[in-house]
Length: 255
Image: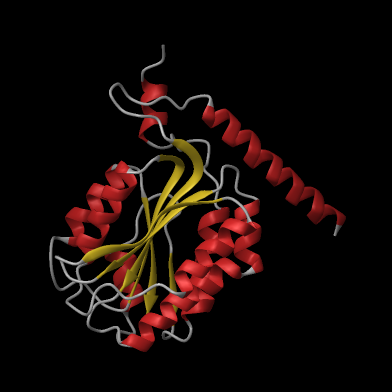
Protein backbone atom coordinates (compact mmCIF):
# COMPACT_ATOMS: atom_id res chain seq x y z
CA UNK A 1 0.00 0.00 0.00
CA UNK A 2 2.86 2.41 0.89
CA UNK A 3 4.54 1.61 -2.41
CA UNK A 4 1.35 2.36 -4.29
CA UNK A 5 1.00 5.76 -2.57
CA UNK A 6 4.60 6.65 -3.40
CA UNK A 7 4.10 5.62 -7.04
CA UNK A 8 0.90 7.66 -7.29
CA UNK A 9 2.54 10.72 -5.74
CA UNK A 10 5.56 10.39 -8.04
CA UNK A 11 3.33 10.12 -11.07
CA UNK A 12 1.40 13.25 -10.05
CA UNK A 13 4.64 15.18 -9.55
CA UNK A 14 5.89 13.98 -12.94
CA UNK A 15 2.68 15.19 -14.60
CA UNK A 16 3.06 18.64 -13.06
CA UNK A 17 6.72 18.86 -14.01
CA UNK A 18 5.95 17.83 -17.57
CA UNK A 19 3.21 20.44 -17.88
CA UNK A 20 5.57 23.12 -16.55
CA UNK A 21 8.26 22.12 -19.02
CA UNK A 22 5.83 22.15 -21.93
CA UNK A 23 4.46 25.55 -20.94
CA UNK A 24 7.91 27.02 -21.42
CA UNK A 25 7.68 26.18 -25.14
CA UNK A 26 4.20 27.51 -25.82
CA UNK A 27 4.36 30.30 -28.35
CA UNK A 28 1.67 31.11 -30.87
CA UNK A 29 2.69 31.14 -34.55
CA UNK A 30 2.96 34.57 -36.16
CA UNK A 31 -0.49 36.08 -36.65
CA UNK A 32 -2.22 33.63 -34.30
CA UNK A 33 -3.54 34.27 -30.80
CA UNK A 34 -2.21 32.22 -27.93
CA UNK A 35 -4.92 30.42 -25.97
CA UNK A 36 -5.08 29.12 -22.43
CA UNK A 37 -2.94 26.02 -22.06
CA UNK A 38 -4.71 22.90 -20.77
CA UNK A 39 -3.65 19.32 -20.37
CA UNK A 40 -6.33 18.04 -22.76
CA UNK A 41 -8.69 19.38 -25.41
CA UNK A 42 -11.51 16.84 -25.76
CA UNK A 43 -14.32 16.69 -28.32
CA UNK A 44 -17.16 14.34 -27.39
CA UNK A 45 -19.09 13.28 -30.52
CA UNK A 46 -22.53 11.82 -29.76
CA UNK A 47 -24.46 9.78 -32.34
CA UNK A 48 -28.00 11.06 -32.97
CA UNK A 49 -28.57 9.47 -36.39
CA UNK A 50 -31.76 7.62 -37.32
CA UNK A 51 -30.59 4.43 -35.61
CA UNK A 52 -30.70 6.22 -32.25
CA UNK A 53 -34.19 6.54 -30.78
CA UNK A 54 -35.27 9.01 -28.11
CA UNK A 55 -34.62 6.65 -25.21
CA UNK A 56 -31.18 5.73 -26.55
CA UNK A 57 -30.27 9.41 -26.85
CA UNK A 58 -31.31 9.99 -23.24
CA UNK A 59 -29.20 7.02 -22.16
CA UNK A 60 -26.19 8.61 -23.86
CA UNK A 61 -26.81 12.00 -22.26
CA UNK A 62 -27.38 10.52 -18.81
CA UNK A 63 -24.40 8.21 -19.26
CA UNK A 64 -22.09 11.16 -19.90
CA UNK A 65 -23.60 13.06 -16.98
CA UNK A 66 -23.03 10.07 -14.73
CA UNK A 67 -19.45 9.72 -15.94
CA UNK A 68 -18.59 13.29 -14.91
CA UNK A 69 -20.14 12.60 -11.50
CA UNK A 70 -18.12 9.43 -11.01
CA UNK A 71 -15.24 9.25 -8.55
CA UNK A 72 -12.98 7.72 -11.20
CA UNK A 73 -13.39 10.57 -13.69
CA UNK A 74 -13.19 13.25 -11.00
CA UNK A 75 -9.94 11.77 -9.71
CA UNK A 76 -8.57 11.81 -13.26
CA UNK A 77 -9.57 15.48 -13.61
CA UNK A 78 -8.00 16.48 -10.30
CA UNK A 79 -4.75 14.72 -11.26
CA UNK A 80 -4.61 16.31 -14.71
CA UNK A 81 -2.27 19.35 -14.71
CA UNK A 82 -3.99 22.19 -16.52
CA UNK A 83 -7.36 20.45 -16.49
CA UNK A 84 -9.29 19.82 -19.68
CA UNK A 85 -11.35 21.81 -22.16
CA UNK A 86 -14.34 19.86 -23.45
CA UNK A 87 -17.10 20.35 -26.00
CA UNK A 88 -20.03 18.06 -26.88
CA UNK A 89 -21.23 17.76 -30.48
CA UNK A 90 -24.24 15.81 -31.72
CA UNK A 91 -23.78 14.30 -35.17
CA UNK A 92 -25.75 12.40 -37.81
CA UNK A 93 -25.55 12.78 -41.62
CA UNK A 94 -23.18 14.94 -43.64
CA UNK A 95 -25.28 18.08 -43.21
CA UNK A 96 -26.03 17.69 -39.51
CA UNK A 97 -23.55 18.29 -36.72
CA UNK A 98 -24.52 20.66 -33.92
CA UNK A 99 -22.68 21.85 -30.82
CA UNK A 100 -24.64 20.84 -27.76
CA UNK A 101 -22.23 22.14 -25.09
CA UNK A 102 -19.65 24.71 -26.14
CA UNK A 103 -16.05 24.64 -24.97
CA UNK A 104 -15.94 24.40 -21.19
CA UNK A 105 -12.95 24.36 -18.86
CA UNK A 106 -13.10 21.50 -16.34
CA UNK A 107 -10.48 21.63 -13.59
CA UNK A 108 -12.20 20.44 -10.42
CA UNK A 109 -15.31 18.85 -8.93
CA UNK A 110 -17.34 22.05 -9.20
CA UNK A 111 -16.66 22.22 -12.94
CA UNK A 112 -17.41 18.52 -13.33
CA UNK A 113 -20.73 18.96 -11.51
CA UNK A 114 -21.68 21.86 -13.77
CA UNK A 115 -21.01 20.02 -17.01
CA UNK A 116 -22.74 16.94 -15.61
CA UNK A 117 -25.90 18.97 -15.00
CA UNK A 118 -25.73 20.39 -18.54
CA UNK A 119 -25.40 16.91 -20.00
CA UNK A 120 -28.28 15.53 -17.94
CA UNK A 121 -30.67 18.14 -19.38
CA UNK A 122 -29.15 18.28 -22.86
CA UNK A 123 -31.86 18.37 -25.57
CA UNK A 124 -31.63 16.41 -28.79
CA UNK A 125 -30.75 18.87 -31.56
CA UNK A 126 -30.93 16.56 -34.60
CA UNK A 127 -33.82 14.25 -35.39
CA UNK A 128 -32.39 11.35 -37.35
CA UNK A 129 -30.41 11.11 -40.56
CA UNK A 130 -27.73 8.89 -42.03
CA UNK A 131 -24.34 8.16 -40.46
CA UNK A 132 -21.47 10.43 -41.53
CA UNK A 133 -18.40 9.63 -39.46
CA UNK A 134 -16.15 11.63 -41.79
CA UNK A 135 -18.14 14.82 -41.39
CA UNK A 136 -18.28 14.34 -37.62
CA UNK A 137 -14.47 14.16 -37.54
CA UNK A 138 -14.15 17.21 -39.79
CA UNK A 139 -16.35 19.34 -37.53
CA UNK A 140 -14.48 18.12 -34.45
CA UNK A 141 -11.14 19.05 -36.01
CA UNK A 142 -12.44 22.50 -36.92
CA UNK A 143 -13.47 23.04 -33.31
CA UNK A 144 -10.07 21.95 -32.05
CA UNK A 145 -8.30 24.30 -34.45
CA UNK A 146 -10.38 27.39 -33.66
CA UNK A 147 -11.14 27.33 -29.93
CA UNK A 148 -9.53 29.45 -27.21
CA UNK A 149 -7.35 26.67 -25.75
CA UNK A 150 -3.94 25.12 -26.40
CA UNK A 151 -4.05 21.46 -25.39
CA UNK A 152 -0.90 19.50 -24.65
CA UNK A 153 -3.03 16.63 -25.96
CA UNK A 154 -5.99 16.82 -28.34
CA UNK A 155 -8.50 13.98 -28.53
CA UNK A 156 -11.68 13.30 -30.50
CA UNK A 157 -13.93 10.80 -28.70
CA UNK A 158 -16.59 9.42 -31.05
CA UNK A 159 -19.48 7.26 -29.83
CA UNK A 160 -21.76 5.54 -32.31
CA UNK A 161 -23.67 2.42 -33.31
CA UNK A 162 -23.12 2.34 -37.08
CA UNK A 163 -20.75 2.44 -40.04
CA UNK A 164 -20.42 5.51 -42.22
CA UNK A 165 -22.99 5.62 -45.06
CA UNK A 166 -23.13 9.31 -45.91
CA UNK A 167 -21.05 12.41 -46.41
CA UNK A 168 -17.34 12.82 -46.96
CA UNK A 169 -14.76 10.06 -47.01
CA UNK A 170 -13.99 8.70 -43.56
CA UNK A 171 -10.47 7.87 -44.71
CA UNK A 172 -9.81 11.41 -45.88
CA UNK A 173 -11.25 13.01 -42.77
CA UNK A 174 -9.32 10.64 -40.52
CA UNK A 175 -6.08 11.41 -42.35
CA UNK A 176 -6.64 15.16 -41.95
CA UNK A 177 -7.19 14.74 -38.21
CA UNK A 178 -4.11 12.58 -37.70
CA UNK A 179 -1.93 14.99 -39.69
CA UNK A 180 -2.76 17.63 -37.07
CA UNK A 181 -1.49 15.41 -34.26
CA UNK A 182 -4.97 14.68 -32.89
CA UNK A 183 -5.88 11.28 -31.43
CA UNK A 184 -9.19 9.63 -32.38
CA UNK A 185 -10.77 7.18 -29.92
CA UNK A 186 -13.97 5.23 -30.47
CA UNK A 187 -16.80 3.82 -28.39
CA UNK A 188 -18.63 1.22 -30.46
CA UNK A 189 -22.20 0.53 -29.32
CA UNK A 190 -22.90 -3.02 -30.45
CA UNK A 191 -26.70 -3.18 -30.24
CA UNK A 192 -27.08 -3.37 -34.05
CA UNK A 193 -23.66 -4.27 -35.49
CA UNK A 194 -21.73 -6.84 -33.42
CA UNK A 195 -18.61 -6.31 -35.56
CA UNK A 196 -18.57 -2.53 -35.18
CA UNK A 197 -15.58 -2.67 -32.85
CA UNK A 198 -13.45 -4.08 -35.68
CA UNK A 199 -14.72 -1.41 -38.07
CA UNK A 200 -13.84 1.36 -35.63
CA UNK A 201 -10.44 -0.20 -35.01
CA UNK A 202 -9.62 -0.55 -38.72
CA UNK A 203 -11.15 2.65 -40.11
CA UNK A 204 -11.77 5.21 -37.35
CA UNK A 205 -9.26 5.36 -34.53
CA UNK A 206 -5.72 6.62 -34.85
CA UNK A 207 -3.02 8.71 -33.27
CA UNK A 208 -0.94 8.34 -30.15
CA UNK A 209 -2.51 5.97 -27.63
CA UNK A 210 -5.70 5.50 -29.69
CA UNK A 211 -8.14 2.84 -28.50
CA UNK A 212 -11.65 1.44 -28.92
CA UNK A 213 -14.01 0.45 -26.14
CA UNK A 214 -17.39 -1.22 -26.56
CA UNK A 215 -20.83 -1.01 -24.98
CA UNK A 216 -23.06 -4.02 -25.54
CA UNK A 217 -26.06 -1.67 -25.86
CA UNK A 218 -27.16 1.80 -24.74
CA UNK A 219 -27.88 0.61 -21.20
CA UNK A 220 -24.20 -0.37 -21.01
CA UNK A 221 -23.12 3.06 -22.29
CA UNK A 222 -22.61 4.59 -18.82
CA UNK A 223 -20.06 1.97 -17.81
CA UNK A 224 -18.18 2.23 -21.10
CA UNK A 225 -18.07 6.04 -21.35
CA UNK A 226 -16.96 6.35 -17.71
CA UNK A 227 -14.05 4.00 -18.36
CA UNK A 228 -13.27 5.80 -21.60
CA UNK A 229 -13.23 9.29 -20.09
CA UNK A 230 -11.09 8.18 -17.16
CA UNK A 231 -8.58 6.65 -19.55
CA UNK A 232 -8.51 9.67 -21.87
CA UNK A 233 -8.14 12.24 -19.12
CA UNK A 234 -5.46 10.45 -17.13
CA UNK A 235 -3.26 9.67 -20.14
CA UNK A 236 -0.12 11.76 -20.27
CA UNK A 237 2.08 12.75 -23.21
CA UNK A 238 5.23 10.73 -23.81
CA UNK A 239 8.57 12.44 -24.30
CA UNK A 240 8.49 12.31 -28.11
CA UNK A 241 5.05 13.94 -28.36
CA UNK A 242 5.75 17.45 -29.58
CA UNK A 243 2.36 18.78 -28.52
CA UNK A 244 -0.14 21.08 -30.25
CA UNK A 245 0.71 23.32 -33.22
CA UNK A 246 2.00 26.27 -31.16
CA UNK A 247 4.32 23.99 -29.20
CA UNK A 248 5.63 22.40 -32.40
CA UNK A 249 6.19 25.86 -33.93
CA UNK A 250 8.24 27.02 -30.95
CA UNK A 251 10.38 23.89 -31.01
CA UNK A 252 11.00 24.02 -34.73
CA UNK A 253 11.67 27.80 -34.81
CA UNK A 254 13.74 28.60 -31.70
CA UNK A 255 14.61 32.22 -31.11
